[in-house]
Amino acid sequence: MILYIIAMQSNTDDRQPDSRLFREIERIHGARRWGSLLDAGTGTHSIGWVGSLVTERWTAVSGAEGHAAQTADAIAAKRRATDRIVVGNWADPALLAGERYDTVLADYLLGAIDGFAPYFQHRLFARLRPLVGRRLYVVGLEPYVIGEPDSAQARLVREIGRFRDACLLLAGEQPYREYPAQWAVDHLEASGYRVIAAKRFANRYKERFVNSQIDMCAPRLAKIADRGLAAALAARGEALRAEALAHVASANGLRHGFDYVLAAEPA
Ligand SMILES: C[S@@+](CC[C@H](N)C(=O)[O-])C[C@H]1O[C@@H](n2cnc3c(N)ncnc32)[C@H](O)[C@@H]1O
Image (cartoon, rainbow, N blue to C red):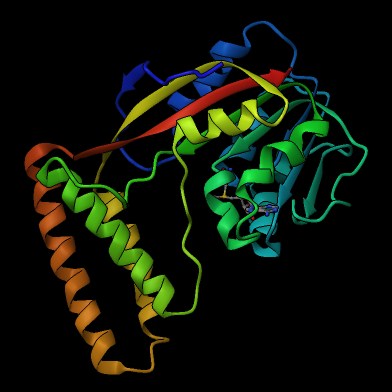
């Protein structure tokens, strides 16, 4: 079955932990119990939400020691003896082999895979499948650095994303690679799941997004050997920042792109 994503809800006010998306998962989940829960791509936002649920136990996976440590700090006050934080890679068949969870959350995991297991994206949902007892929830971001922008606001968000990715690549790092909701639906269906809900949420980016994306480039530019190139890029970043902040002020944010929530069950 092909499921087209038609439902849409506005409107985020920042790239903050987006409570609309977790509220949507809670709405879809209804009165079902959360049971044992796997946060398959953990971080401070998702673990904060997981900690607010009535679960029997949870396991949180990160591909990076640093990310796992931040997550552990964020949840320390609520963590029970049975709750685990695991550093591993989904490309490793031994990771959580033989385990099963009532509920699995993949919160912005798909887009981050490129940094940990390049070209593994099409296998991610099949890899998670034996771990999913009842429900898998996928949170993702529609790619927003590709395609022709259809407004001045869209152009600015796209340019900021492209500028950030260029700085990361020039510094020898791997940018995220986001995938469309329909791509995720198709791969879920091809990987032994039935998609039961799908919704997109329109994004509106504010100062925090603009500043965080430009600011994260400074340490990357410091690594570039060609100092003339680094200086030119830094100047370009500041010009982008000024232009984007002026738009944010006059239009109350930059409207562009979508986040999405998908819910799937073992077929
Ligand atoms: C963008 S962060 C997820 C956001 C997170 N849910 C939050 O609340 O901030 C992506 C997470 O997925 C993990 N990750 C990405 N690729 C992975 C892989 N191949 N194996 C295991 N973890 C991976 C990263 O280490 C990180 O913990």
